[in-house]
Image 1 (cartoon, rainbow, N blue to C red):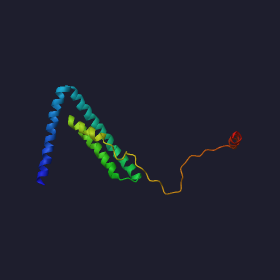
Image 2: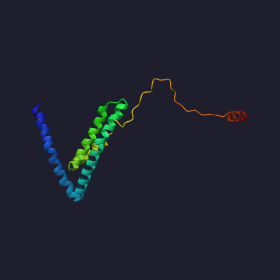
Image 3: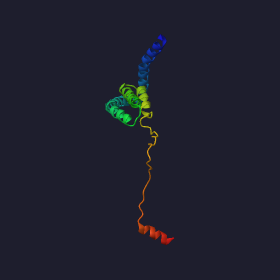
Image 4: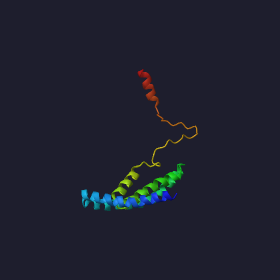
Length: 141
């Protein structure tokens, strides 16, 4: 159990060091454009967090109305909030990780086959044909 904590601590300390190293390498290639990228990604993360903090309630309401599990809605919103935090955190690797989280499909937005109701309703289309049309068709045959 203690070794799991040490491994977790190692990764927590390794990620910022790897992030700093990657930023220096990218800054050598991109120059000052990296600063613009970091500012825009932080702004995007902040906006995404604001939007998602309000959307969670709507997702929960829709999930409950459709008879789905609200845990899926909370999971999707939590994943989006984590991506927003990673965008706010300055770095290239965290931005790439956030992008991967945002590109994963949401379970709540996937179309699901809804079962047919157990009533005697038959869905279809109705066409009204006038008597004159029926007479003209029978004369043409």
